[in-house]
Image 1 (cartoon, rainbow, N blue to C red):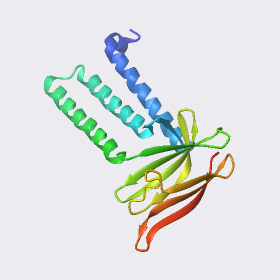
Image 2: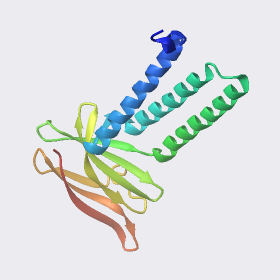
Image 3: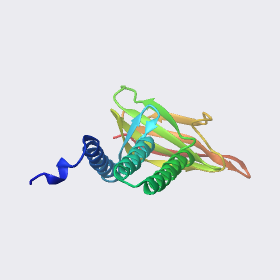
Image 4: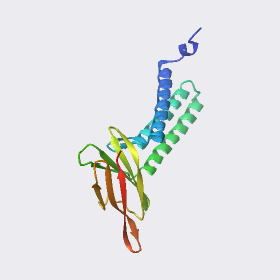
Length: 191
């Protein structure tokens, strides 16, 4: 009588349950890495947002497949349509929120550290986030905001100077005002 539930399950159901459990564990691990340690994934242009979107889509698809295995025909169609709409919504959210991100990499003078700048425009405003690269992970260091279409790194309107191997001085284009272009200055500690 023991393992009665698993005898009636197909291998496909067991794989789906394992996949759902794995995705939940990965999602929790990423949440802890992001919130507690400010560590994010960045491989070329594949960032944490893309990874989160893929995990969310796989989770929704796996749950729907699991629910549809023994579902009646009408319920199967309703679940599939709802899941498809949810997946399309997740894809739309990704492209809407992550449409214009650009990444720029700067090596320290001794080549031991890499500063990564993520430029993220949003309508006429925007922001730049700074990260310290550690393999496929990047550690958040802070950021700056821009105004009125200011994209300092894309437009090459910045001056970045390494003061030593862990400190960077950045003079950047903030945006335009009535009086003309506005530049700001900040210090970034890469640790």
